View 1 (cartoon, rainbow, N blue to C red):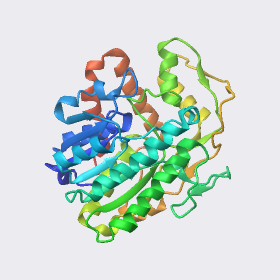
View 2 (view 1 turned 135 degrees about the vertical axis):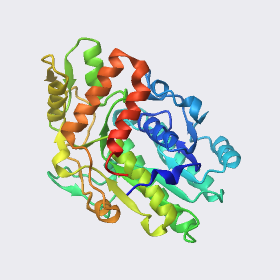
View 3 (view 1 turned 90 degrees about the vertical axis):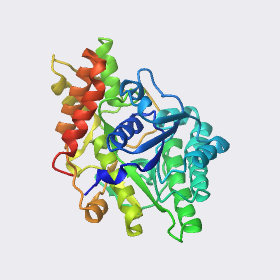
Amino acid sequence: MLDLEFYKNKIVLVTGHTGFKGSWLCKILINAGAKVIGYSLEAPTQPNLFTLSKIEEKMISIIGDVRDYAKLKSVFDKYQPEIVFHLAAQPIVRDSYKNPKYTYETNVLGTVNILECIRLTSTVKSFLNVTTDKVYLNDDIRDHPFKEDEPLDGYDPYSNSKSCSELVTHSYKKSFFDDERCAISTARAGNVIGGGDFANDRIIPDCIRAIKENKDIIVRNPYSTRPYQHVLEPLYIYLEIVEKQYKDKKFQGYYNVGPDECDCINTGNLVTKFCDAWGHNLKWINKFDGGPHEATFLKLDNSKIKATLNWAPRWHIDECVRITVDWLKIYLSNINQIPSEMDREIDEFMKGII
C-alpha cells in the first residue's frame, strides 16, 4: 500500500514533467510535499496539461533535452535528487516512423544519459524507468497477455526504442548497481486515458478535437485491442514501486502495469463508451487511413505486480471513461477549474487506498 507521506520533503527528479503523465505525477508529488525538480522539453502540445495544472510555480521546472548529457548532469549535480522518475520520451508510434533517428536518440541515448547521471550521483536511492506495454515481441496472437519474462523486441521504432531502453536499464543495473546503492526498476504501462492528454494520434484527444471542431470522430483502427487504464492507475503504482524499493531492494524488478483483462477492449468499443458518456447523440465512423503497421492485439499479464505489491486496479474502463469525460467537460467550460478538478480526482482515486 502506498504511503504518500514517504515523499514529504524528498528531492524528486521527474524527466518528461511537461507531458501528460508527467504533469499528473508532479501534481501528486507536490500535493504530497515533495521537492520536485522537472527536466523536460517545452510542453509538447498546445493546449497542455502542464500549463493548465498551474504547477510550474510550485516546483523547479528546467527546460532541457535528455540527449544533452552535460545539461542533465548539471541538474543532478546542483539538486542532488534522492529519487528519479524517467518519463521523458518520444512517445508516439506514428511519429517514430516519421523520425526514427530522433526517436532512438531520445528514448535510448536519453536513458543512457539518465542512468549515467545516476551512476555518478551518490544521493540517488531509487530509480524508475517508465517504458511501455509495446516492448514485447508481438506476433499478434489473439488473447495472449504478455508476461515480464517474454522476449523484448518491439516492431516499430517507438516500441523497439523502448525495448532498447529496457535493455540499457537492465545492463546498468547488473553492471553498476550490484552494490544496491540505488534500487532500479522498469514499469511497462498500458494505454492511459484521462483528462489533459492533447497528443496527436491518440484516440481520446482525437475525440475531443472532433467535438470542438464539430466534426465526425474518426477511428482508424476500431478493432485494435489495447489495455486501457486511467492515468492515475499507473502513477499510483510508479509511486509505490519507487517507495517500496527505496525501503527494501527486494522490490526492484521489471513490472507490467496494466489493467485487468476485462479492461482490454478494442478502440471502437472505447470510443462507443466515450460517446455514450458524452451524450448528445455523439457518434464515430470507421475510416482507416492507410497508416503504418501497428499491433492488432496487445494485453498485459499483471499477476506479478498484484502478487508483489498486493495491488488491484481501482477504476475499471467504464469509470475511467466517465471520469475522463467529466474532466474534459470542465476543460471546455472553465479551464480555471482544472487544478481543483485534478485534486478532486486524485483524492477520489486515493480514497480507501491510503
